[in-house]
Image 1 (cartoon, rainbow, N blue to C red):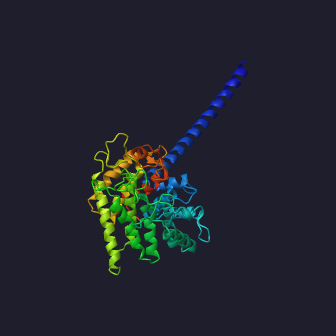
Image 2: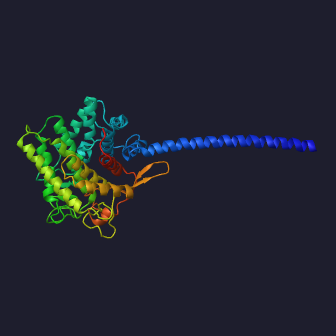
Image 3: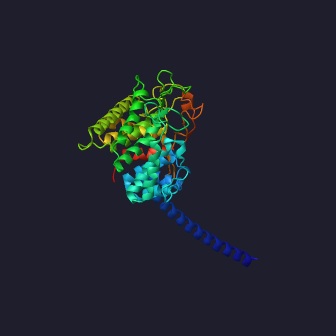
Amino acid sequence: MDERISSVADKTAVRAKRSRRITRAALILFVASSIAFSAVTAGAQQQPLSVRVANAAIERWPQGASKEWDFQLGVVMAGMDAAWRKTGYKAYLQYIQQTIDRFVTPDGLILTYKPEEKSLNNMLLGRELLLLYRTTHEEKYHKAAALLRKQLFSQPHNASGGWWHTQNTPNLMMLDDQYMADPFYAEYAATFNEPQDFAEITKQFVLLDEHARDPRSGLLYHGWDETRTETWVNKTTGTSPNLWARGMGWYMMALVDTLPYYRKNERNSKEQNRERAVLLAILNRTAAALVRRQDPASGLWYQILDRPKEKGNYIESSSVLMITYALAKGVRLGYLPQRYSVNTARAWKGILQRFVQIGPDGAVTVSGTVTGIALGAAPANDGSEAYYLHAPVVSNDPKGIGPFLMASAEMEGHTH
């Protein structure tokens, strides 16, 4: 009996000793793994936010942010373009090319693109076609860009020459469309030596500046219908009812992304230099109006820009990112006064505090982005306060990620 007890005790002691060794080994492995994980996490957290958000976007959307050739895909690609130009990381350019190649055939056709819809939203990705043509010299990208340019030849327009938003929105001009179409159009004209097109581009900005600008605030209404036939427009001015922040963001980004192709050059025609001066003047008075509306407490801008105390009004991420990007780029390129750097610094601080969340694993979330606004597309899309203030708000939306990459590239400084 005692021998059996002793035997059992011996076996128990052996098992306990083995268990301690296993536990000790597991603990060593766990600690080592934890140290390694912490090192990786710390390394990731030491990267600039622009890099971390760009890397996360590639992981989130390995096939691109949309299955369609549309502006949501375009705004993410514009952000990735900014991240590539800032860092020089080839992976970002490769991601742009792989995404575009899902749509562009060897013959230069664009899958899912429907030119008969005459949607200006289709133009935005043309900028990435020109980027890829410039970096690879592959003719298919030139052909695809020319296909988009062809749409602009026949884009329906109002009596004053302003482009309709789409075939299905007669006479409606929108601030958004200037970002969708004008930077691409200007880059195409500069790339293929078509200087006569700059007059047409300038006209689009000028029409909205003249007809959509609110004389009281200096801000621009989201849309303008020259015929005043839309049921929701102001019957005197033809403008939509409200001053929407993201609309202003699109317009400001359009200006600072288009102006670089209006190169100040003595060899240019006097007309083109005059047009450049016109756009600079529009940019400066628009920037001044926005700076006056910057919220003193947060450093940001409200959805309905001129009514910060309105019940239900709030601050949305994509709009403030767009405005911050445009002001910062305008200052960097010398288009805007240096004093606006104070405004962009306050805005960037507010953006990081309010809309950027970093998880325990170092993952970055960009929150607070309105999903869909489509002024004039249906009777409910009436530009009312309720329309803008009750749209769904989500995190890591393409319309937030793209502008975040652009704004962070500007605010973190250009290194490449």
